[in-house]
Length: 194
Image (cartoon, rainbow, N blue to C red; front, side, top):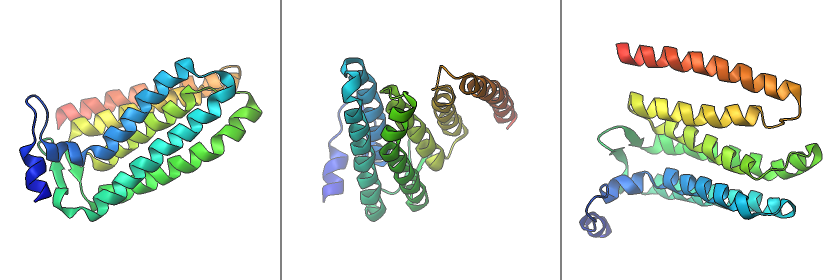
């Protein structure tokens, strides 16, 4: 009954409701990414721990959506013409990824304060990398695989160079960027051949 009601509610120009429900965990975390980037602009340095709490809240809500999806078998399947898989395997991997990201966000404020690196964009980058990993876990087309890898990689490039005053941090970011750029070229060339 609820499934039929949700399927009948469709505004023109929007994807089908089933596809949006299958993408709900990714949409929640992507929204959290954008909210954290915008809040970082107006948050004073003394209140950056609140950004950590907010990112933890977004991760917990997303984990709740993943747990809900585990028991909601009516909507499991492929979304967006078979390019995104919403099944128990991808939800299991999403749960592991989200739990790991939640632990990272919980232990990060103390570490960042000790190192003098407590900037708000750190938490947004963690959420961006998590979205990339979640896309990789559910990808069933080469395009979604590439988008997930690039979203994950770009976030990790920036996180590698996050300690911008340290030479080793800058060196690692540059080396990772070069390696990732070459790997992306080879990956795209291989996908084009396929």
